[in-house]
Image (cartoon, rainbow, N blue to C red):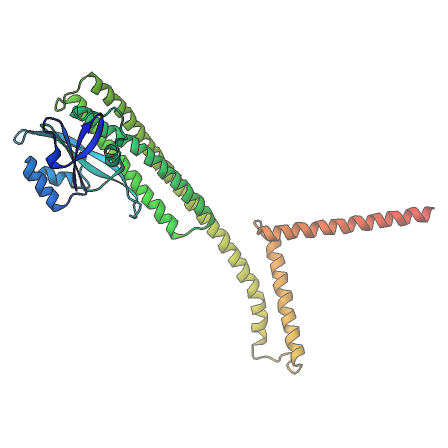
Length: 352
């Protein structure tokens, strides 16, 4: 979709092609472009098809170059994109900026918050006539959006990690993996934009006045801050994943230990019943249900004895066993104290 914008009283106003004032600068906003839009842009503005392919390539890095034949300047920057319907909600897309005469052309294969902010006049002190400053404003808004998305990714990762400690499922791991991918995309795009900023300062493709230089300094500071945040969050994510893996492994070891204790306890009554299943003379063979009760009681006694022995000798008994053990020891101590008090009372009465 191609939209035309011109500035009136400091605000961008959408125009039809017949309403355009050819004496003013025009912003040609092309988002989620179709094949027909690409053909129209190439024919109307004489854009090199190779440049158009570069702009529509999702993996294209930031750069700036000048086309002498068609007399336009091409700048490609990386923008953050939020798409809640995709598996990877946060990713990056290239934005092609073509400056030709009085036309400021932006081309992107998708839509994003940066372009919506410009179209909604959320950018203050914007001048469409100064194409260099307009380009730097896109870089500045991209850095601001990067910083906001990084904070949202950090909050989302913290929430998922807290949920992992309560219930570990594959869904949480997949969500963390997608967040890690988003952080890698952001870090790569920020580094690419940083190289573009350095090239803008060194080359003379875009003419920078003193105000543009100051804007460029601010954009570089924001871009470096976003790079450091992306790198920090990536390291924190890696360390938290290692800690989560260690915790999950420890919990699995505890579960396996409990299962082993249960299997050992169940093995003892199995040993008793298997002994009576051998081809040997059996006691209580003619006792009917009395024999069954005796054998069941023996199995229960053996199982309880094995459980108590294992729980007592285990250094890392379960919390339930430890609680019961402390309760039993406390009751036994109380009984002893009562007996001592009764003896002392009897001795006192005898003396009287």
